[in-house]
Length: 343
Image (tube, rainbow, N blue to C red; front, side, top):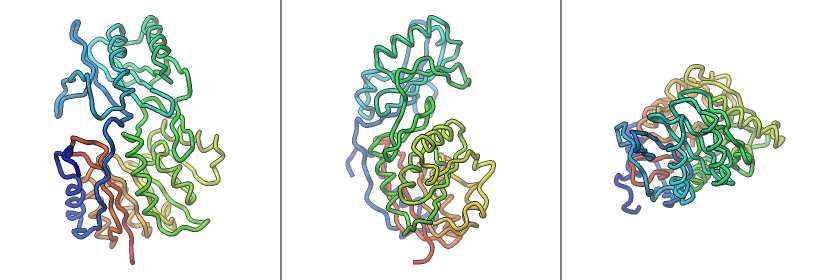
């Protein structure tokens, strides 16, 4: 491990599993992703008189620190920031504060501007000119918490998951880097049990299909996701690629309406990638389904420790665990932990 990690991320995963009751869990070495590869960024923007700041929020604070350089971001995103500042400075829709999400997709940037006032006709004209000058695939706009709408789309905003092109919703969640995503997918697929043509995998918190489409190359996939836009994106890709015989996606808020044991019973494996807070509500029903293999993708060791404690009490063992560093210079660590019953 190199010295860019202020905190030993391997130990964070090891300690989390020990707290859950697995002190001797087999853990692979930390997978480190290269610098200058981050393809998604959520920036804050503030205006105070003539001063405009575009960057990240202070740690545990609300102030936006203007960002000129970043060793994590793809160079293409960094080159986009100076002209983006010029655009924002001239938008009437930015009065005091807002946010900018940039996803760098297969063919270029997909941008969501969420500002604090209504977008005017001149604003839209400036946004369209910016998109054309910067070869942005799409720029979407939203005022406050309104639903985003495209201001301009020059090309489909698609990203490929296991060779399947998925048109993402504006501001959609995306793994921080292609390299980090590849490491997650590799670890998940390596954790699958022996499968047959009739095997079925249940996937919870499936998002837009980062894991769904790779999993569908190995077994039938029944995916569940709470966000309507992510479900729509995955469903459109399933239908356009004629994959309905291999996979399905259903909208379901798994915190409010967790899957019941009968929904998961008989599946060869359960794969879940819950949000930062974990899957506490779902875990009780997941355990009752008694599926022999559970593959848990975690972005929060503390939530993992809590959820894995329930798996330990239910008689699961850790077959293997892989820590993945998608966030250099921070304490954050992702991981894929494979739980099984029996030998």
